[in-house]
Length: 419
Image 1 (cartoon, rainbow, N blue to C red):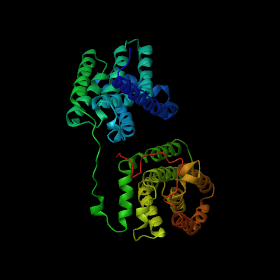
Image 2: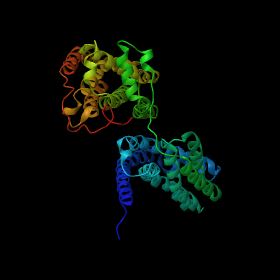
Image 3: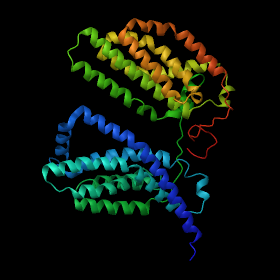
Image 4: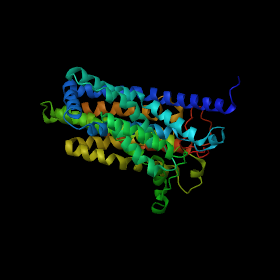
């Protein structure tokens, strides 16, 4: 008996999306496990016991369903931007229906959430063991939560109709109530029938109307990052919070308190600049068309440096509120660190550690030195003209047509049929 050709194509698509989902799940496993371990290390088991008791025993099931839905939809949204990239291009010419392609993309998003869903089982089992309450319905509802969140984030034709229904299905699936769970399953089925096929995501930006001339370069950078720029503040803000807790929970004199704030502030600024520079290097690499504009290499470096400087202002304000005396050395070290970030963006392909690693090594060294001897920040400030010279020289010698063997991302490539 021969298998029809169309069934073979569907099987190939299934294996493709399955492998994509598994790869993304393995990538998210380590960060999710690290975050869970860090929260457990800082807050201990007593805090989680009180939190689990408050959400599962002292509140309605919809509150816990809303909490779980936030985690699931966040993970699904991150996975959707990667999995659905390019699914509306040439791949639609392959012998598979649009509905099947949409369902397989949803399956890949669901597989990506498996590490997060597995960790959500831990508080449920903990509460069930310590309180004697049977919470089987919560565990059964977690796979439906993953499916509902996958349906919710897919870019489909009737998303204005299906996304509210899928969001309600997420809350119902994790509510711990059999009636809500059945209703959530029905809503997922309705969303699957009403969704339609995948659609390309076309976002039109009007930055070019507001920013012209020299600011056009900055507007291109903002268009490349979009809302991803807010994610770059997560680790720096956590670093600031950890520094504040460390200083407030220890009886330091003003001298030691300033040193601790210097180290935490320098580390937070380093992580922020490394994250922003890494995203710009991948999503806005050098391209030949920019060389035809009336901008010198020095001007491009200065604009990139000012772009990064603007994004460091919120952290500097927070540091000024924490300890005003620590702002001076940090402002002194910041210009050379920003120019290093502009330099690293243009030389990322020559180093295995990449942009993030180059800036992190330099920033960690600076954080250690200024926390021990704050006056060393003046040496970093004196190094600024030399850093500017090297960054400008690197920009001037860029070979935008060079072959990058490790450049495998579609982001930033104007020749890809994708968003």
